[in-house]
Image (tube, rainbow, N blue to C red; front, side, top):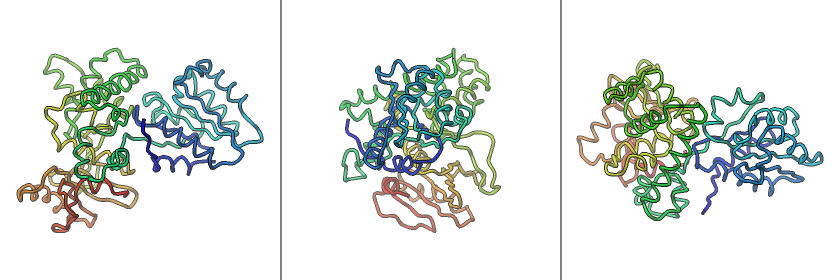
Length: 398
């Protein structure tokens, strides 16, 4: 499989070298965590003098004897070389029974620079503080961005390439398949057998059909306001009586496993977060097509999903804005930086342009306001709002 250098993620690991933290690479299944760890290993071999790398990949049969924490600890201890800089790299660490006991002990010895990847359901962001007694440094890996998609295929016409990205998404493993059906079969299998199976195993779920139905509902309603009560009511209307608590828990499990990202609503005028009805976005929009089909592509929702994930990828806190009962697609915040975004597929008509402008023009603060659409033109100003082509914005490094 062709590889590209994912420098943004690699730099995060490089900058964390030598810190006492356990470096943990998280993200949805098949998003490139293992490849990132391999790239980091190659960097260390090239750049660090007098190095000893202890690399364990539990996906490989040769490490089957280390699948309990005592064996893992013993193996690493024997591989340690006192006169060298010792790096410990473990891939799919959750496959080792009691792995946290071994890692906590090795970390306490302060002799290793430790890096691990693991299943998204078994190495959750919310669990890291309880799994490991020491500090952790988390690097979240996402499926390919549009910019990475361009780099992988070497496309120079970004507008034509964006059409392909909207259909194919960022799950790089699917790029090996030439036939569209084969691509989506692969992507559906990733979701079903790796994401959902992990969740079932982690939480010992018995009602697997309910988890699948909730996942399908969220996929079908990306960018729509959604609540556990609304999903429960929809299921009950189809004679599948479920309570809000169960539905809410299953939604949380899907987000914990990086299948979906929850975006809360934010009252711009009152500067407060709203408790009811959130939006949910897929970790990669191709999952929706693979699971629900492509007869109704609904490009507007797909584009909104792409923008939401790009903002999260860039490290912003992302909210759905509300102002005087009007919706602003995204409020993006990072430290002292804040801006507003509306996403539209086509703003070529005056009525559509005015509809997208209206909520932004009602915001009275001076933070930047942007409309992203498929304009295929240079950015321009419309009443203080910047109108940009979506593909151009996605290719920006900021």
